[in-house]
Each structure stands twice: as C-alpha cells, then as structure tokens.
Image 1 (cartoon, rainbow, N blue to C red):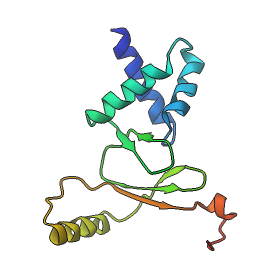
Image 2: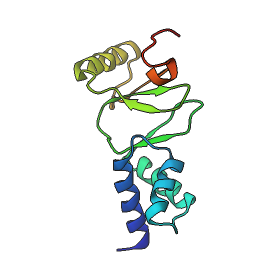
Image 3: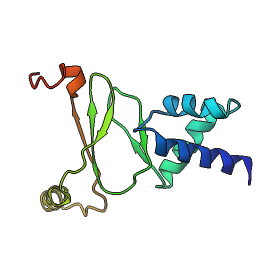
Length: 133
C-alpha cells in the first residue's frame, strides 16, 4: 500500500470516529497514533476527498470548515457561538424534498443534491435548554 493511500485511509477511519471535526481536530487525533503525519497532509487529503465527493466539507461563515463522512442527503446545523456542527437527523426526508422542490419551482434551477445547512445557538451555549436569544 502506498504511503499516501495509507494516510488517506487513516484520515477516513478517524473521520468516522469523530463528530464533524475540523482539519485541526482530525490532525490532533491522528497524531496520537501516527506522530509523523503533517497538518498539510491532512488538509490535502481532506480537500482531495471533498472535491472527489468522498466526504462532505461543511462550510459556514466565521467557523472553520468541518468534515463529514456521510455524503448522503441530510441536514446540518452549526452553533454560531461554539462552532459545533450537528446532524439534524431525524429531519423528515419528505420535508427536505419539499424544500428542494419549492426551490426548484421558484428559481428554475434543477436541484441535484439536497444538503441543508442551518445556523443557530446550541443548548449548551444558550445555557442548557434556555430557548431565549
């Protein structure tokens, strides 16, 4: 196995163990088992995999990109205070389909993918369940 392939596989495996990590978080986790890996190698592989559609790159303004091995249609929400990203499963797929259909109807753009991104403030940042703000 080529070194690059081994590094890519290690990144994929570690990505599956973490919850929407940043490249830096992924790098720190991988370094525990493979101290020789560089942050640049992690970034290059993540970008390559995201560009190839093997993983999702989740980009929100004002927070570092996060990565998700789940490339299937689903919804993410990001906390604008702490930067954590959550899957909103089980958000009903028919609701996501309705949003896509209505968007297509309004804009005339043929929707080919349905990955929804929302922003808000998580429970922890609001003070454990306080719905104000």
